[in-house]
Image 1 (cartoon, rainbow, N blue to C red):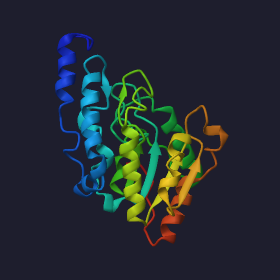
Image 2: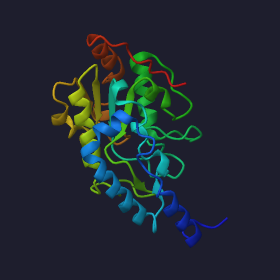
Image 3: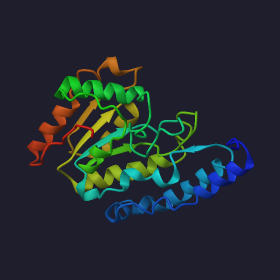
Image 4: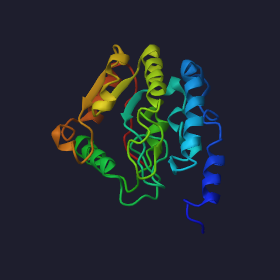
Length: 239
């Protein structure tokens, strides 16, 4: 098989990136993102140019996956940084990865450890967090694309404006809603959230988890805040 540095693979990546990134976005999210839609179109062209020289992750049809479930159903917002830079890992949901990925990403492993300490839920054997998304947990990265092998490479490209518009829309809609902000990049969104309850701690990365992520009990605290708003708690088990 040809190496992805070869022209045939480059052409395949560029053709794939011409997929409309907004095609499967929920209609209410598409309306809410309205002011940022031109930016998404611009970013698609920028990423397409980058894909002429680099493998860009995740796959185009997954870039906007956090927006596939209706805005009206979102009850929890969990904000990450940018997609995992390892090919085959990112699926467009923050902290999640393809179901077959082994070993699990280390940040997710720490999330599972805290989940067990907090609620007694045994760690899942896979990294697909779709079960959370189906319950109204929005797993949103601040930046939605990355070059393979180059973490943070698309920061400052413009995705931040898109995700900020998403957070404004959620705050404008109001509760029931709880925001879980892990790490400083996520916590820069605090001023946009208004009166939405926030659970903030260091990032679950191995570099920072011991500085306050472990022991923060975000899952039980989130469920308590949802119940205070008249909403059912999240079942945090990953099937």
